[in-house]
Length: 251
Length: 115
Image (cartoon, rainbow over all chains, first blue to last red):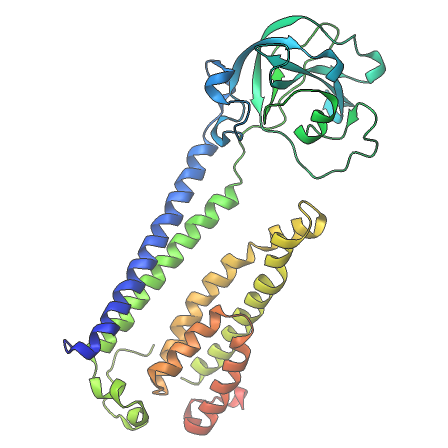
């Protein structure tokens, strides 16, 4: 069994077991990560300056859904849009979204959900001037729902690629839900809180167990092969005649 | 002992169908269909069957291994039996090979229900 011609097989067994154990730990890590994120509700956390959480060109930080942020800037009133299909106390209505240019008036803007209205016609005039507010940070929506009329200011979802058609500057890859609604508006509630699918996490755990099982199985095969008559593997054709079948294999 | 052969055939069929569905239907829909279309979402939710495939495959591996030991097949053929559960459609052919092989070489393993 220590002869050089068997080394490849030993090495293969070692690699298989190592790979299976490693992949198992990888899945276990993913499972634990899911559980950790699931336990996280940031909405009550202390607010952070927007810049500390996301930059204008950054992808949305996945662990910051619902993070309260403070942001100061200039309203881009002309970029106001209405997002349809939003429920408020059982009524269908619209989110009123106005981008807030962060820093200078032509800087990158963060779309801010200022509040909710039943009908865009009832919405107060968009704000102007500067503002400083606190908002819950949300990742942009993207349900793939097409905007049936791109020319108007009603959107089916808060997608950055749609909102950007209504402003002249860059937008953040996120939006904020104002904690206090603008004058004349009802408060909008958070759509997205971290809700990690329990099944997704469980799936990783099941995969981890599977990998370790296969690792153990590879180890078992290797052990059987080592402890067996080497002639059986060297001359496969004679395998059918072997009578020294070790006991303890079958059920 | 006859049950081992029948169990193998049943498991091979389940693994084969699950793998073929996951690899040839669910996965292409999940990754290739238009993002968030109903087909794509179907592919995404159907992908949970990968877990089922994995767990049935674990049982399949043990049963296939025991059968291969019992019939004293070569390592190469045993490995082929095991790997067949991971390559779409291969297992259906392997299952036929196994069935022929068992009937030809180890008729004592064939139960009356499998004949």
